[in-house]
Amino acid sequence: MRFLAFSDLHLDAPFAQGGRDLADLRRAELRRTLRRITGLAAELGVDALLCAGDLYEHDRFTPDTVTLLEREFEAIAPIPVLISPGNHDWYGSKSLYSAAAWGENVHVFTSREWTAWNGLDGVRIWGFAHQAPSGTPNPFEGFQAVGEAVHFGLFHGSEDSGWSWASQRDDRKQPHAPFSAEHIRTAGLTHAVVGHYHQRVEGAVHTYGGAPAPLSFGEAGDGGAVELEFDDVGELVKREWHTVFELEVHGDRELDVSGCGSVEEIEDKLAELLAPLSGIGRVTLVGELSPTANLNIERLTARKGPLEYLAVRVGELRAGYDLDQIRGESSVKGEFVRAVEADREMGPELKQRVIVTGLRALDGYRDLEVV
Image (cartoon, rainbow, N blue to C red; front, side, top):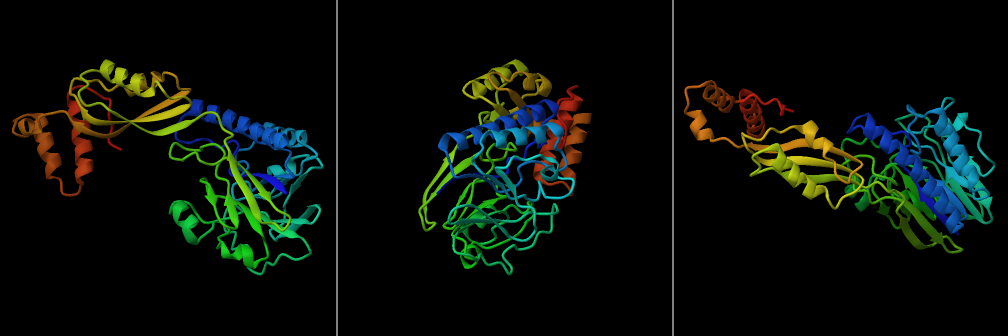
């Protein structure tokens, strides 16, 4: 048995760390990623294409998203397409899943209880649907796979124990359908394909494919479509990830502006940094900012070089001023520096940002702000 599995594509996601241009670029890339996934399923000739939830964004989907999914899944018939809705694409009367006219090869799990799909001889694939954006409890409470078959699971949930939980843990990310890996075996499932974590997890009895395309500048981008092959008794014999996105996302690039006396010099260093890259990038400016350099963020952003899109932000910039000298002056600048340094409520990092921003404003620059 061979499956191609994916999750967390998040069609129509806004990529909120940028403006409209970036959102449109990412929206188009996610759609192309879906086409690469279905094309790969057809190329590999898998027994089924499995989606473990968060296929799209419930609050943002449009009629052409419905058409896209109908067309792409129908194009690979008779390969079955199984979908287990997650917390972002939860199933309801107004969901995309209810609006679509699916081909015969598409099966959407619509019950909040586990149900079995029996479309392959000797195999049962169990799944359920989130029916709200939050509040789905542990799905394994009271569940036991039954019947003479090799049993697999397909669902969207938060594995909350073991190394995979520790490596994926994010206190900002709400748990949905929390479970422990041990529940998979005790419920009678041989293996489970799970969605929700955006990084890959290679568990002994479960697989998170990870997001097929990065959804923010901070994501590792190590997910994809994962090819899973099992022997006749359901033991995993192959697990291979396939890259299905094209636009790389570079979110960890820093540009040290120390020694740059003008915006032109900063542009030259930026061009050198970007030269080997492609796709989408975000650059964080750090270092000592010269008082003579006009830090024109809009101008720097326009110098995207080989990238499709560039975002530039200010990081930890130190003041390129002689603070000892300014502190001793009987001037507005001197009074400003002394007042900030005497403030007992601001921490050292905030004081530094306030001093840099304020001194540049007093010099006539409006290129920084305290955030």
